[in-house]
Length: 390
View 1 (cartoon, helix red, strand yellow):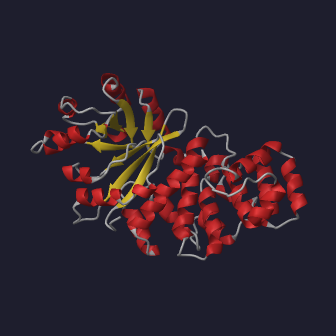
View 2 (cartoon, rainbow, N blue to C red):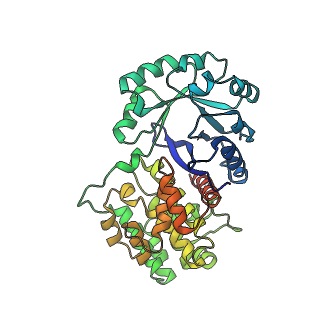
View 3 (cartoon, rainbow, N blue to C red):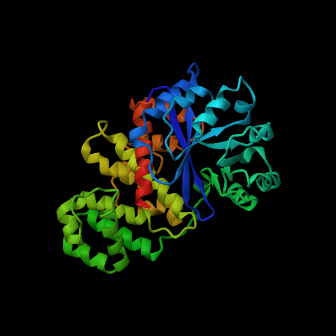
């Protein structure tokens, strides 16, 4: 992918708190002709494009033009188009869209009526949270829901997300669930504390029998561990049938990684599905970006750092208190507490992939000497990994 194009993303979350689609947003530095660069760049991602039923919205960050349609658009991709692009110009874009008939989302705005009368089929109608009051959005959703599935963009707070749901949209895109804070003084609940105890035993290389005995105190925990180890996301060549077998095949370091997933997926928070998906995406992204940059022995720790980066949200306990209960390597704790360290720059990139305009992502990429191609491919591969782990 050309170095001039960086991708950031927003998840589309439904009222059940599940991520049902992803919105990719393209960023272009000054002086770059965006649509040809976007077509070339998106085309280079064909081998890592997320498969399955989830829609992938593409927000070009610039007025849509016919050059973007040189991209071989995947079946699950949805192009966002603003009415301005359809109601101005010589009609070439409108004609090309009718010929190609891709999945479209009309970004509702001025001249939307003319765009809706253009003869194009819009699968989705998108409403920017910043452009409408909740009452206005509810009225517009009621008027357009027969034309396309209503979705909202840029829901940055839990209140904005709830207002979107109340307005009748099917899903809202944004990182509102990261803006919840854990109450001070709260402690880990017993089930979470038990997983932490088992993790500490594994990390301290305790006797296999001792760890297995701790696991057997929670049958559900043992079951979930084996389920995750054998999941398609990890691609093992044989089925792991017991904890002892897992130690034999994986070793303590890998087992530490898989057990860490149990803690990530143990939350009962209403936003747990979205939080878990985001944490797993960060984990795989950081692990992938570490290849060739840090020693192989650091890969699993990069994964764990990303996976644990939302533990305070998922467990409802401040990060400092979570880390007090765990015996994590210092570089992981440093990164999670915002103090940098070896893994800090990788976590910064993972967080920058969730920003809006791409400026921070471009800056962070330069610090690690990573290209847009490396980051974009790793991010889409990480999204696929998180989807499989659901």
